[in-house]
View 1: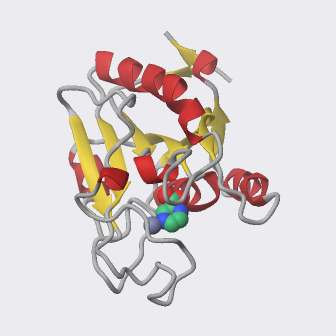
View 2: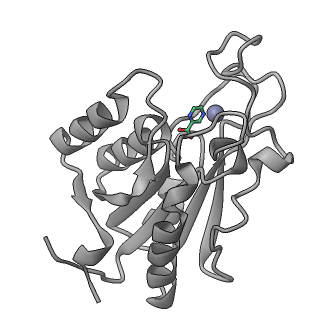
Length: 195
Ligand code: VGL
Ligand code: ZN
């Protein structure tokens, strides 16, 4: 499918933070391998004057999602730590970009970039109708952000060449992709964007 970008499109890059990359606290295998592809999307959107949103996991110490605090995850993406920083090779455009922090309260977790954030307001204010979602992890925050967007009325494109999953259980990422497809998401690759 060929897709032509319009002024009603926005890019959402999910959680490309050090702790989710190989060597980090909660690594997504090969999470860093999608950076060149994501950078191509980021430059394309940015060059076309379209907004780019970067979500980030931004947990306090002792966050409920952490093992030892009742959760299932090793501590990760603690606010203001190196692990919570974006990967140094991720291209952050100088303007028309937005950082969306989520999971910032001790007692709430957020797999979706829309949960407890102003992401929906920022998109609606700008007249955005279609969102293009990439990043990590396919089976958690990408899935929930894309699904959140669908439920809020956006047409959602998932970047097939710009996502990676953790697959705690084998097949989780595949299931997440099927779930999103069944709910109306469209999977695209960079080559399918008309330029
Ligand atoms: C994520 C597990 C815990 C994600 C965040 O970004 O997909 N996964 N917190
Ligand atoms: Zn988290």
